[in-house]
Image (tube, rainbow, N blue to C red):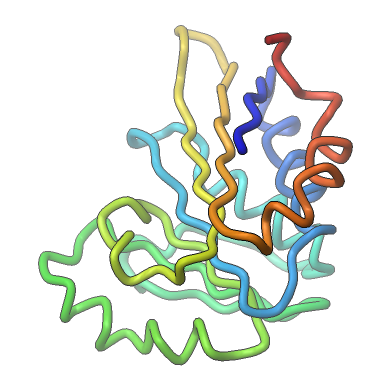
Length: 162
């Protein structure tokens, strides 16, 4: 299961995040990947808004974990600066997964072995010199398979032609 999207602007990236948030359930985990500046935090801003959080959403690069309360609690984790898997575990990673919230991990490919067997992988790329971003969403596991049609419908305005 994969869907390819294009966001023309940062506002589009936020709108994709908000549309995605409508489908999120307690215990969901999302792994965000992409180079620096690809729009990972911008996507999380949209997810937070979609979950009903109205405050500022900023990168957790130096704090490592930020928590936002909306319809669901959003745990926003950045593992870019962590050198060992043990460092991630010590952040309370497992507790965030066991709670009633949603876990979004920037640089999630670095800790994929810690993610639950069911998660959403979102790869953001910058195809050119402008604001445009490409997003590839891959659903892993039966939970995402059950929601996939709804996810495709929610994200249809940004879908790239096959």
